[in-house]
Image (tube, rainbow, N blue to C red; front, side, top):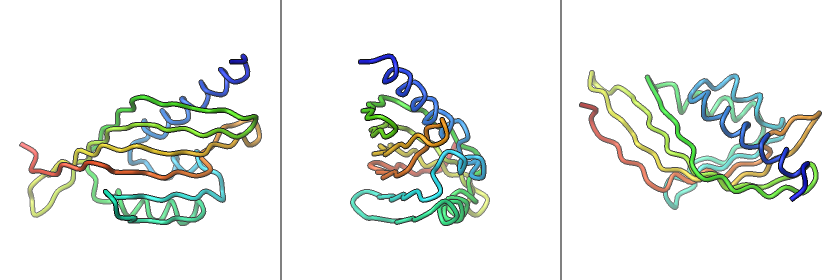
Length: 143
């Protein structure tokens, strides 16, 4: 592995960390995506969203997270393959989202893996495409 590849992998891991650290703060998350981004979201085997472009992404993410009162994201293994100014990656994440329904708080504990395409633009790595797989969601009242 070259020094450039190691540097790219570190920068991409930081990009993934920034996305998770922003949790449900959608507007600054949009700075991490290319303008022509393509995001697909699967809930189990069912495709829930097929989003094209940053404007549509911000609208859908904002609607999806509007009811979230608190959240916590934790990233796990992240395997990245770099090829010049393009890269791909698989990232595992656990995201807990707290919402309120009829005065009762609920927590949705989500186990997710992302299949990403990254692109370096103007010296910065961005998410060009993301397929999110919510493979397990456990929602229950929060005690």
